[in-house]
Image (cartoon, rainbow, N blue to C red):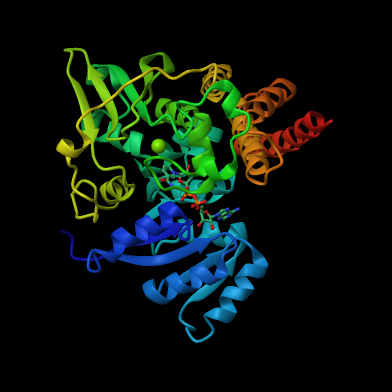
Length: 396
Ligand code: NAD
Ligand code: MG
């Protein structure tokens, strides 16, 4: 173990991944220190975390919330309170932090995650949307800066653990034939197409195995999460989608597998608890206690596998198609999904209309080459507008 504590910025500290990250950090006071904590709007929650972890900087994306946070922390003048995207990017790239947990949800995470990448940090990537939106540009930025990109998404962390450390982006050199990407199937795995029409946000957010933020819970229920993860795996491991096969595995114990030319299939297993991949990323290449329940295979008894049903869950197909189209199509897919999921969560859109909105938004938004991050940010805004229009048309 190194003597100096590894100092960390946690982007999205009040979220599900952010809190799990802080729980692992809490267990290892000498090993990690917190440089900065950030959140979107929940000043009261961030204030409590600041009292415990005493970061040098705290950032609220929302400006009025930053004022509230400053008031709440007025007795702790050593904590500098900042606001907005510029504040997020500052703490993501600051020389004081060597590791950045990228755990903001959605497209809002792209700019700060990219700032961390460009500054050459160890970047723990939970914010899959950032990579899905910008793909090659993002990976080029990683290679150019020498940033150490470690996957936190449980499947990708599992794949990473099953790969030779020096061939993470060289599937042929590593002798890989396939990646078997596992999926829980979500809470509606056994619902009929008819029953899916009337499912509620509360039902969608009640995931059978994982406790997660609302957006990813809905993504899990539509299988868009697996679609985003398919694209994420292609970029992270430099592999084509025809070599990735999604396996629905309802127990969520095998977090993914890598198949090699000699017929070996390596898997990473564990209790479904995000503190395992988070601890793996924080301490890599060392192993540390994550507070995770020991796996009891006798209790679990059996593993099951089935193919995903793309008819009931078209989002997985839409994501694969967007990746195939390339250019700005994945950014459009992601933006339309974010808008549709937010409307579903507000009770304004049926669950089965989520893929309808995405498919129509993809159809009406021209694809252009993803030449720069400016193009990606502009397409993200344009696609959101067009998704809103499509939702308006559905209501008529
Ligand atoms: P969450 O909704 O629980 O938390 C999101 C965090 O982002 C919060 O701290 C929130 O304050 C912050 N945030 C929201 N909007 C923001 C904005 N506009 N600007 C700045 N900050 C903002 O989400 P989560 O479940 O923790 O997921 C975070 C990311 O990790 C997502 O990209 C998700 O796909 C990914 N991920 C999550 C899990 C999981 O188990 N929760 C697993 C794999 C990957
Ligand atoms: Mg995952």
